Length: 217
Image (tube, rainbow, N blue to C red; front, side, top):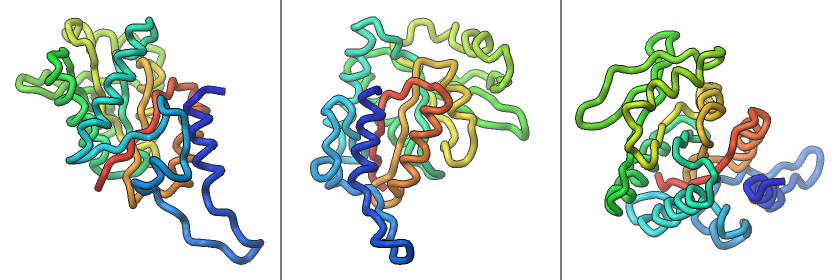
């Protein structure tokens, strides 16, 4: 069992239990204190808070990804997907990219979006390219992704924001062709049951999960 799944199981174990078949407690949401109380995952998989004052946490996440890469593990092209709809994944991607660039790392940022029924992979930046159409559930996904990545060969990290896991399977389909996925939950908003459901979807899809980031609202 991976350290990531062990961490999620610790979250599940800490979730409140129903007092009986009728009495139920209100659903708990993730809070900042869950980082130090109740959720005692190993340090390398413990959720990281991300927000205006979370520079050290983003630095820690970046260090982990760089360590994986240095050890030879694929950790260059990473999908970031929120558990539920919102701007949390965008904030985390922007913060992580800024932190990496401050360390003089070459970082590219992309976004998986849709135009009607067509999935598009779009590069963000000062001179963004036209979106690359993707057939997410087709046999040519890996080849299309590699074609999109070719101009980004000099990037040490490619961070891709994808739609929330609760809204579609797009993030999971793309993550299956990338090096892995990071789930983004929002403190005070994301229910633990929603996080567990998203983690289960990631596991069943066979994606490599790098962990969970807690984003401040």
